[in-house]
Length: 273
Length: 277
Image (cartoon, rainbow over the protein chains, first blue to last red):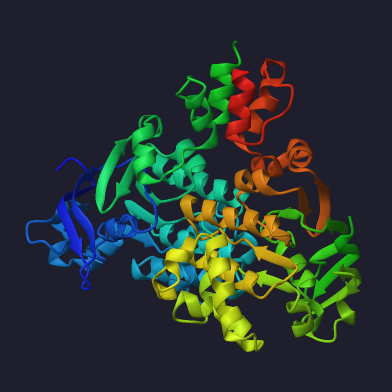
């Protein structure tokens, strides 16, 4: 297996009969920021919940395999402690996973479970709070933070454990532009350290700027899979996924000069004439 | 044109806070205008809407305000109680779940009118008219909990409109929505404006906002940093706030003389028209 996570013909049918995934096969590699996009109900969250075994394929021949330590494990075998140490998961609603009285304790909890205590833990906690712009709130109660700050805390509490893979469902919900950009830059930095980062996002401008790979979902299937430039250049794909490309990409395509994904790229491409 | 909203020297401080949530804010909004409020998290957008809705001072006991907040010609303190304000000013919150109270969409639209004793035939006619107006006729028999996020927000905007308010305030109504839901909500905002309702809207989705707002107010750390037409305000933004600019406007500004248009574009359509002219 040449990826960190492999999905092999994954189907998922919920108990009410909803077919949320209809046969998805993917190889997810390290050192990649992968964005899963698609409209509400397309199967994005169901897909990423398979990456750490929160959900398992409901078809017998479907499998999700994760490289953990030196071994490859199937999520079907429910090696939850192995998966939890390898794949960190941040929920869309941060309040579902924040449960300590201070931000510092929130981060210390995960480290203690990994056997990291004392000065070693303090150093990592301080560095992570600093990276997330939360240093001033180390001893504050998370309930007093804004929605955006609580989202950053939930991400920090996962990243401090340094999992090989981190999955973040809607990292920018409830954030203003400035905070959203800061979070994406931080996740891109974690990718650059050699990790696999998987996000679910509706923010196409930020996805275009930071993602290495886009997986576009529709009706429980992968409709497009490739670098942002490729996926955003296809009007047919965008039309059928109900996804709107970044404004600058749409503009460039409509004036017959497709390619640029960011304003900087458009200035470089269009400024000469 | 008479001012529906006239705010002068408004400052608000929450109990225990070490700084003002709003600091000497003054602005006006005319009848039937759409005013967009931009600003980072914590800049004071929600506090401003709470003041316009009368929640401050009539409901919140943890906030003190000074200054004048005149809504529909009456100072907000002079309204006897919150219900007197909310009869004329509707408030739509960020989280649709927090305001849907009925099981079926039809009931949700009829509910406010029933509470006011409107005769049933009039209610039926009004529900049908409003559903048509907001393009939710096909949702009337659906369960509210089974709607998508965008559908929920449209139903809430329509239900709020059913109460006949002269002003509707919306606090980040699209923040939980995908692009399709966002577009649907913005279409509902334009419908409100076309029906003569004055709208104040706090929003992060500036590309949509730029296309439907008559004016923008920019809050920064509780202060009114700028106000004017979307074109003026978005062009003047500087520092981290420049991130709010629609990308085509940013492009035109950065290209300078190489931008072919005589005007600066806010929307993709405008930009394409100027580039290809």
